[in-house]
Image (cartoon, rainbow, N blue to C red; front, side, top):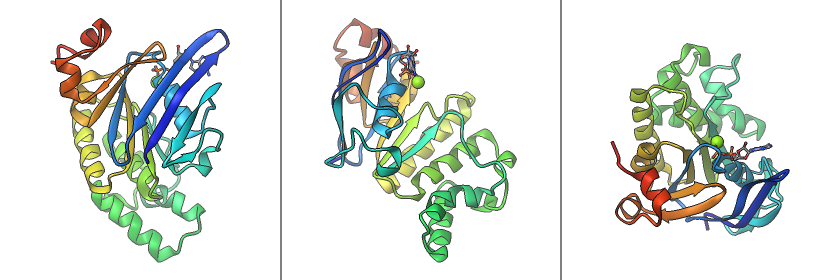
Length: 237
Ligand code: ADP
Ligand code: MG
């Protein structure tokens, strides 16, 4: 169960973006994929999402081979750095969107969306437009939207990267709380070691398209596998 990626390789022309990556995210875990810019984080996430296909290797999602499945055939929710809201739709309808296109009953949509908006404390903003929200509120809306269809997997690519430090800290706590509430298998991509250490159950450090180390924050901090991990993880400020 969860996500099992095995020996995933991806080249862009001559450039090796993923050089045989194994990733195992057990069901319900929140794993941070941490590494420097250009390390291959987004490429791996996009392959798990079905937005990109590997040159070789496999991706299992909850024991099903999803390697070649299109995104809509995977049960995956996304949150990206630059939120992709429908500007002319209310907050409510943005969160409801995935349920509406699946033609779920209106009453079910209403209760599900309001429940999620309450979880992210946006219930009083249901009728507003995304442009009337702050950056942090918008990313909370994006979280609610990604979770609306009850995906098996939640994928976040530097979701808080564009926000200032204080809001980032708050959103970390939101993500943590939401995850504790819904226990969805989650991969959280970041290049920020502090963010990764604080938000995740387990860290996967990736650099030059290779996994350098996998472990809990304490394991990585106390026992870095190599110089790269040591320099990259510590010192925590
Ligand atoms: P990260 O998210 O860790 O910063 P990426 O996975 O986005 O890294 O990118 C890894 C490398 O692959 C980068 O050097 C990037 O320039 C390259 N790359 C990513 N996508 C493409 C693409 N579509 N075409 C060519 N090169 C790409
Ligand atoms: Mg990236």
